[in-house]
Each structure stands twice: as structure tokens, then as C-alpha cells.
Length: 629
Image (cartoon, rainbow, N blue to C red; front, side, top):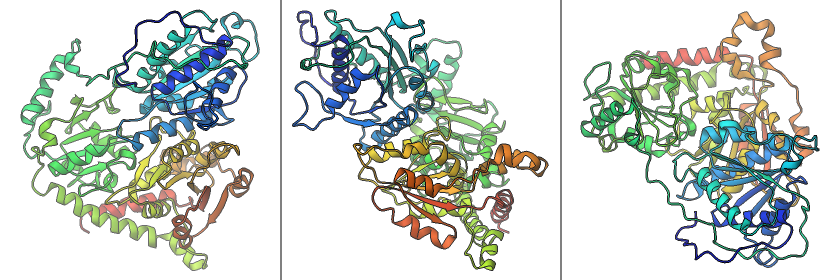
């Protein structure tokens, strides 16, 4: 937001030069840049032409930009879905480029199905709390409902996913329209960033434009602060101030946590020495690790939590939770972020003998899929931050020792299991399995690197085998955990963090689903990005679920396994992307270690035939290791 801007006394009525649509588009671009927008993604179209012309001029070099046009970075993509996920990736990257939090990124489309293609990214941004500005052009109101070309009802297109939806009438050149456009921009950016609500997310501005849509030789309007109100961010969202019937009891219990670190669980038990774990889900941040370390609690952190690593991190936690002496002794779980990867974690959080404290600092909702939480806090209590709530003597040490034994057991299964032995006997090299590939990706990812992880097996394999003392920055679209737009998201992150090495680790179906994200026009900025594709010719995650049981073998391959036989090398050649194929373990590290410049794809052929049996062997080996057997 514009810090310290004080609007001047109201001037005479302001009319921007040029056709109304062109003038309004230019004023909107000026206002968005003044409010902190630095990147805009554009998908081509005619009805959005006023914005396209304005953005193209604003993206010109300093010595070529027209007077009055602000400076911004423009990214053009022909696929609206890819454009929206590129914008999402750019916004996510901005959160790690400074301490100011994620910046809003705008995506511009024409009308009709173009606007509808933004919906997957809008849903991900909604659930992940990413500020996006969805700017969809539309016909003026007199053409709606008339059968006009590319015209549908775009108002409310994204339903409850948006923080703000405004159907903006077509400008007609009335006095003070520029002021109104700036006030609209202030509301849009404020809602997208969650400045007043603490709940960032997507905003939809449906912008009607009436012909003419093309600028003439008229100048840009002079920059102005009229209408650009300075919005002060809310300091906090305190639930004790709300007036509902349920909250007074919650406030009382929260005060007890703050006062004496004894939240009086409804199921009884002593506070001092309670066997506690920290569950760090997606987006938990470093605070989760600090809380665990301050109190000597085991840290069960997902890869994209931002907390995976350090002296309390337990890599094999999801398998160790089944051990009675470890998972069975847990009596309290402190949840930060949104855990979504593991059924054992959800079973832990659903247990009636486990007190669940959820720290949810933003938004109206909180993560509690088991509907079992005892306390919903907006911040970590002071005594917890200060380490005055230690667990039982030897509690953390028992987990760390079991995790070290589990790591050796996992490596033994991966390095000496049937898959590796078959490869050695055939002299073709040890065959690569999903966990083996994930282990290699983790090994080559340095603390300064960025690792974008796809949904399904890649993130879960990484969750099992990644053992980082200092982890890389791991980013995943876990808002809805879909496979949509992962290539485009990774590209946006690489564009937003150009000084860091960015690698994406995805499955073959995730790659194929968003292969259009590889398309980049010759005028668009180049990006350095290595994509590691685990190609097991289908959806092997279903093999580890109930669908992969032998009883369903007659239908599994067609409706769950979905083999495709696609030639990834040919696809990459069509997009002008370098491609390398790896077929055995010996070729993994050399291929991964030197990504080079530009976009490259490392396709790793993965054997999924024994995925279900391997998962069972891993679980059994870790269970034996946990018992010290």
C-alpha cells in the first residue's frame, strides 16, 4: 500500500484523455502500480485490449515509456489457466523475496471461457491465502443476455473463492471517473492482501469496456493520488473481541494457556511433562521449528511447511506414529500450518486421548479435518514460545533415536529391495523407484535452492526420505493439492526468484496436465528451471490406497492407473525444451546436479509395479527399527 500518502484537497473534476475504455484502463494500471503491484500476467484477447495496450506501454524500457505510464513487469501467456498459475507463482515468490509478505499479482483475460479458465488458480489462491487480482474484461451491460459473441454471466463466476467481487460498469467519460477507478483499486488491493482482515486471497474485478477499445495519440493521464486512500493494516484479529456464544469459553481457555501453560484439556491429564508433538503442515513457517526446539518436542513437519529441518525434525514421522512407544504416547499435538499429506497424522489428530491445539493466525477457518480440536489460537502462547512447556524426560531423544534407526532401515529397503536386485541381475543398473528418486532430489537440493513439489507421490515420497539439517525453500500448491498448473506455478516462482536455483519435482500426470506451461513466446523473459519428472506411466499413488488392493485389479489400470505412453522427449522438443532421460539409479545424481541455463526436463523412468509392496516393506522395516529389533 502507499505509505504516508495524504490526498490533497479535492481538485476540480478530473476527466482522463482519450476513449473512456482506454482512459479507465490507463488509470487502473497507474493505481495498481502505485498500490504495490509489480507484475501483471496477460492472456491475449480483444475485449481486454484497453488493458493490453496500457500494460504493453507500461512494460517498455524507461527511455521508451510514455510520460505518465508507470513501470511494471508484463508476462504474456496464450493459455489463461497457465497465466493464472504463473501469477500465483509470482505472488508466492514475492513472499520469499522480502519480509513484506506476498505482493498481489494481476492476471488479465478477455471475456467468455477465457475468464472461466482462471477458476482453478482462483481456488488454489483462495485456500492457500495468495493475493491475486483477477481482471476479466466483459461486454457492456446492454450486450449481456443478447447472444453477443463471447458473452456470458461473469459476475460471481468464482463464487465464494474471492475476497471481493465487483462488476464494474463500462466507463463513459464522466467527470471524476478516474477518482472512482483509483478507489476501486484501493479496495481491490486491500481485500487481496488481507490488510484489514488478515485473510489474503483472490479478488475479481469484472471490467466492462465499450468500443472504441484502441488508443489514439492522446497522452496518458497525469498520475494523481486523488482517490488513493491510505489503508492502515489491522494489527491483529483477536477472537476474544467477537460477540458469539461460543467464544467467551474459548477466550477463557486461551487465557489459561497464556497464563500458566496449562490449557485444562477436556479429557484430563497433567500439563507438566505432557508428551507433545508439533505438527507442521503446509505454510507453518519457521515458527513451528522454534516452538519445537524451545520445548524439546518432536517436530512432524511436512516438506512445504517451511519448518522441515533442525534438531527436532523427525523425517519418518508418519511411519513412527504407529509405534506404541512413540505415536501411542502422544497426548498433545500443536498444529501450525495445514497438514494434508498423511493419514497417520490425521488419525493422531482424531484420537480422543490427544489434546489438539491449532494455531491459525489468519482467516475465518482453521485446519481441523478430524473435528477434534480443543483450542483454536491466533498466536502461539508466550510460555510455549519461551520453552516453558517441556515434554517428559527423554521424550525427544526417544523420537530422534528411532528416526535414526528408521532412516537406516528405509535406505536398506530402497538400496537392497527387489527392484534394486532385479536391476543388478540384469546388468541394466538398479531400477529407480519413487522414494529413491525423491531421496536423490532431496540430496541435491541445497539450503539456498527452491524446490517446487507436485502433488500425489512426489511430495509424499519426499516427506518420507528428506533429511535436511538446513532445508531448501520447498513450495507446493497444497491449498487444494491439485495437479493443475504446477509447471506454470514453478515458472512464476523461478521468475520471481531469479537469483536462486529453482527445481520442480513432479509426476508424469502432473507434467502432462500442465505441459502447456512450458510454452513461452520469444518476447517473454527467459527463466532458469529444472523439472524432474517421475514417469511411471500413470497414477501410482492409487496403488498405495484401497483402490490398489488385488480385489480391484481388473479395473485398476484403466480407471486409476491411467497409463498414457506419452513421449515426453517429443513433447519437450516441440516446446524447445532440453530433455534428458534417466533409466537407472547410477544416472540420477549426474543428471540432477547440473541443471544449466534455461528450462530443462529430466525424465526419470520409475518402476511402479512394486509400489504397494515396497510401501508395505518400508512400513515393516521402520516398525522393526523403532522397536530396536
